[in-house]
Image (cartoon, rainbow, N blue to C red; front, side, top):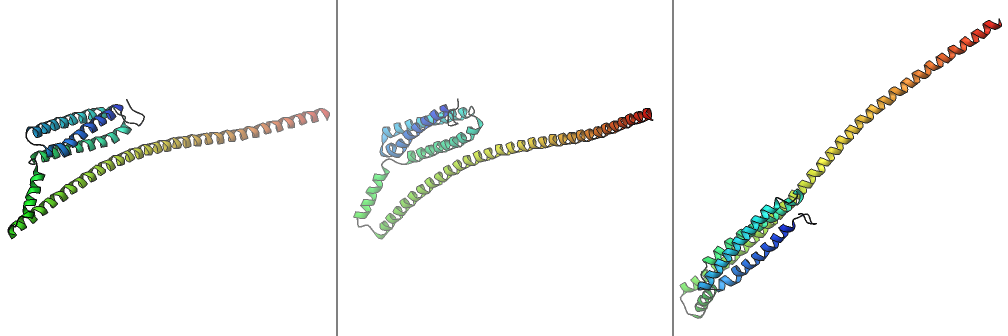
Length: 232
């Protein structure tokens, strides 16, 4: 059943469900898992995996629902579905990444950096600390670049969907103009035929007038001849 905005009410419900699941997964990946240890951490990771599986099932339902949507709205929903699939893949990658990182790595790193800062180590230890700091900074920059790349990819998908809609609209307008041109050509042909018919009728009417006038003149001449004969 299509909604007033040209989409599907059921698809919008799936979209809301997907967003809810995504928010829960993001909270676990960004906040809970990095701060947990032991069995609690493992349980949270398993729960996150189940939620990602649920998100995949929702995406499958969206894909089936798109088949029931009218063609004008189908393209826009397909572009949106591609964005959701990209988001699901990113969540899987982020979960694998955060699962592979040892717990409390941030606190261990701070302790190490504090030990290095407060101790009187050799020049080699100071160089190692500097290299570690640069490595951490490079990792943060790499993560920021990855997020920017994902944003650019998402924008490209949205632009692609808009372009497809524009091309579809232009195609429909072109077909309308072609049909209008054919109709005008057909009407012009009928006008030519009607013009020829009217010209033929006009010629026949002129011929008939000339014949009628000739007959009248002949009759008048005969009447005058008969009268002349009787009088003289």
